[in-house]
Length: 179
Length: 220
Image 1: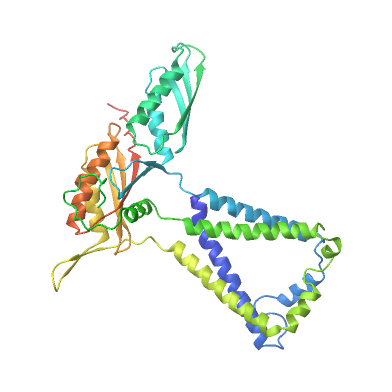
Image 2 (image 1 turned 60 degrees about the horizontal axis):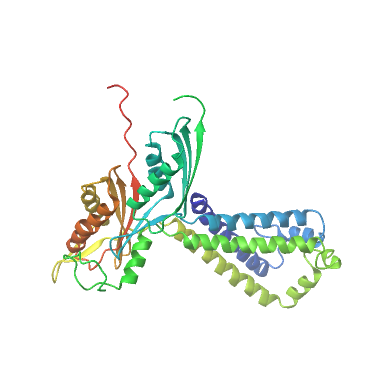
């Protein structure tokens, strides 16, 4: 989303500026060259005839309006979703801010969980608020695997000076077959 | 200096900007802010959404079916504009110029690379010493890279010449003790940098990452 924002922001700025310049040019041209036929760059006289003959309830109008609304909604979504999802850590000094990315936190958790003997594989999603682990354990693993994994994760979270301790959810699935 | 500040900065001068300001500077040093871009995007999105919804409702006759049957370029509006032509010309020209300038400023702001402030040292009455941003950042990165638990480090100066800040990215090794690394970064590296660059304070935004383990050689 952040990449999209970096692309969209200058693009929209250019569109805005270009549209505004066209309006100024056309208004000045229509004013100074009063007897000229049609527009200088934009055929706005033809457009105004078309618009004068088209009523609000005729066909392309609602479709275009819905399209404009959808584009607006997409821009809002991009703008709101492009925030940084950083995970804050406690800093040792006032003038220091320490962050890490959710991806790094997920990798740390994943490495710690996969290091357990009975865990075959694990997928981790992490944010500053929540860590979710889906682990696949061997069939013959002890029954309390979930507690073991939760314990390993809280050990890791104790070591990391996270500003806010995320909620941990672990789900365990057993692998069929022998080791 | 506030009493609750850890007493771990023997090298730092005592005249410091307020803590709240330092904290804010360190927070904005973590990454380049995209807040302006985001809010403009949301604003334009809201305008487009409002226009889209309004016109859709109008064209489906929610307000009034006779209104929906009127032409887009309504003769009432044409007459109103024609009766006060100079005013509308002025509004269109001024509005157009304002929007064009705003659009160009927006483009320039979001395309401009993030500034890298140089540090100016006072070398006496007729001398100023300029430490280039790259040199200072490289020195910091080299020093941070020597800390135990840090595999590699990247640093750059951000902010303005009047209020520089440091952005440090650390790649930690697997066995790194995060609290210890951060404490040593603050006490050993940043304190030294502050006194070397003759700065009263150098807020730092630190980004932590984990060094990817080197793949084991396939052939022993």
